Image 1 (tube, rainbow, N blue to C red):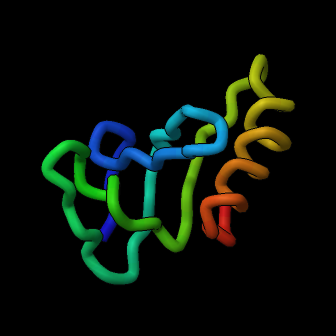
Image 2 (spheres, rainbow, N blue to C red):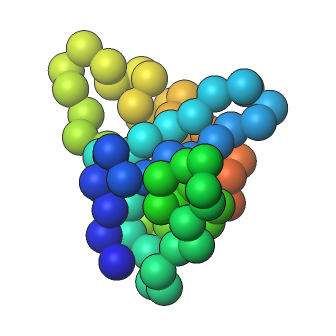
Amino acid sequence: MVLGAMDCKLVIPQLDSERHPDLAVYLAPPRCAKTAPCGGSGRPEIAIEVVSPDSGERDYVHKREEYWSLGIKEY
């Protein structure tokens, strides 16, 4: 299953933040929580972000570390 940014919410508790990858690839359909979009209670196997020229460090360093901390191994 492939979800877009509006359909995938990944909560990062230690940062009191969340991420919405541009695309999230699940090998099995994610569980849906009543208070979050699909993906809110599961993690994708692959998170894909489209990198813009002005956000290179944020996309290549910070987001990569955040996704890794969530157990997402491919970004």
